[in-house]
Image (cartoon, rainbow, N blue to C red; front, top):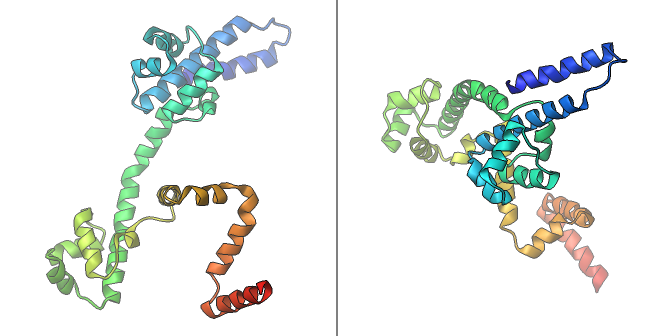
Length: 248
């Protein structure tokens, strides 16, 4: 029985319960179905993370047969075990009592990937053409500077071909831009990449600075620092002079 069948059965059971209030509730069957659903979600998360049964067994210090028993719904882990497994498989614990598998979500994302790539190639081409025109260069000029055929550059700008990243890097340099100029920043993917980059920068800060920034009590100081960073230099000098006058 598939996961969708389990979910449908649970919904059907609820309808039947509403219609048959006087019928004794079968707790044993309910627990059995819930165990099966949990097992399907555990296996789904494990396969999505490319982990083996043996990997999970080593993590939790149980036998591979125990992991298989959980995944088949013949047995159920404790909450601490499930928490460790969620951490290891990089999913929220709530995934294990949801109604959607990662496989279904992944399939939907994979379905949208070709269209995303086509759209991004058109956007990159438009940005390349804009930057080239701002630099007052013809396609022939850029071709001579980069060693890339004019026909290829034209196809890139029209979104009819996708420029390999090493060629795009040379073209970016030719129009006085860097690769960041072409990167996505507005979609969910762009926001995620930007967030990862921001986290990388944050993790590279000195430990005392990270601790200060991570403490909610210091948020007011951070806001002040942001405001100061946006001030014109002459206004900033006036503020500095005023602070100096106060402390003298």
